[in-house]
Length: 265
Image (tube, rainbow, N blue to C red; front, side, top):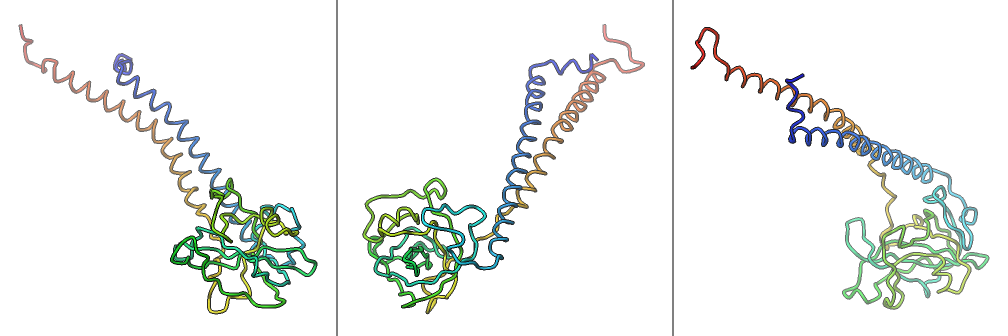
């Protein structure tokens, strides 16, 4: 075993300890990527099922004070009422499909029983000054039936958007039914709806596109990659050890007297 005595040197002890630490770390990273893959796959399946489910009246899924659940989110709902344009607001710092920053238009829809459904009618560009109320096309007048995706209330914790106070008149940062219930002094259904029908006249407000799918296969590829790295570490360590042994033996052979030659005196 003297040929492996070099493994006790400082350089090789450090290298070996690093290799030992890397293997479980890479295995854990692989399991983390597996967890992300499972999460994203489940989210994609949940969204797909919600988007393809038959439309239901909004009152079946939500009520005043209700917190929209993961299984209710993105469900297609219908609602009939009258838009209250006098009390609509715009939501700041929202982007269009092209990435342009503007506003979402949030218009209360007063239902037959007097309860209110918050309807996000889509995106409009900002005015020349961010503090100015943008130009917002009017929704259909009178009684109308809308269809859209049911969404959960926005919070800073869930969205990362800070709920800034002291904003210009009729501008908000987050769509939250509890906050809007206080502002409107009305019974507001929990959550809100991203309108998909009827389509806007003239293409404005620009309707919000369907939620995209998350790239779960990428996490699966990373999972396999980390585990391959974990398997490669001991193989690479052993390769380095064998090369070191070979190099040391070759160096020792070169230093020893060649066969048939007298040793130096």
